Length: 360
Image (tube, rainbow, N blue to C red):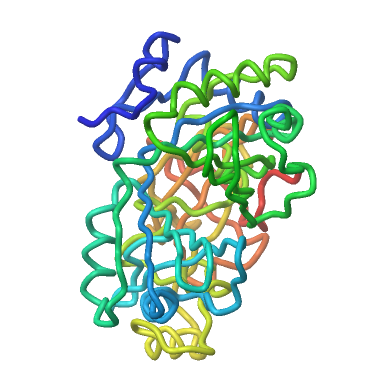
């Protein structure tokens, strides 16, 4: 089990620690609901240093990214970030990721913790272009500072005007007295905020500086459990739950990051899928009655026949109702369609809704 550079701090704060993607990670401190509302209303800090970071360098860096990712990275300019995925040859997804353009010959790819080795091998096997690849996953710490008060809480630590940073942009600057820190406005909670990338050796200094600067704004440490409820309220896909090696980006509603203006791995098959339509789709649903849908629960029709499986589900702390996502046949995928979630021995009625669940 790996530790992050901040594990000892989480333990000293009394966090409940759990194994996650090979790391010893804080799942909660005070409790999921309190932590969830802290991010929705104020500002919270997640240690997500388990995520993977690959640098791609050289004149063919963009060409390699274009080949292995579904989105069109040629539209990026310096300081812009793009959400994308790595398609496999079977119509599924190797991983979803963020692509950061540092300059025309240097990019940063941020990948999921559980897929670091898989992604590295996948991209490497397609690298016949002489692109220099550097895996910095073990050397970089990452904090996600999320919530409506994040910009105010962090502003004293940097000369960058955080309040004017646009969504999906980043800057590299001095932060909390540390040079060459990446400050990014991407977010996985739907409540705004920033991701701060820095060297492991600076982790404790930056953590302490953030909590000192944010003390007047109600800043608190937040665990991975609340991160999951926050992202689900926004309908953001979680790799391993809502997308995986067997789900296509078209089925998952990720057609918007699948651009057929270029050639990429398995593009022809995915293009055919987009043109001809898919037989199943990832849908969002809300329970009509009291209950909590969980990952793995069966989705059934009114006769009780299984039509799908819940990929993500929870009791929404913001909406106070059961919400979830899952794949169903396309005839059940229309908005307002009635489906049923098998919760133990009861089939609870649910309705298909438009994302996000949480409107802010």
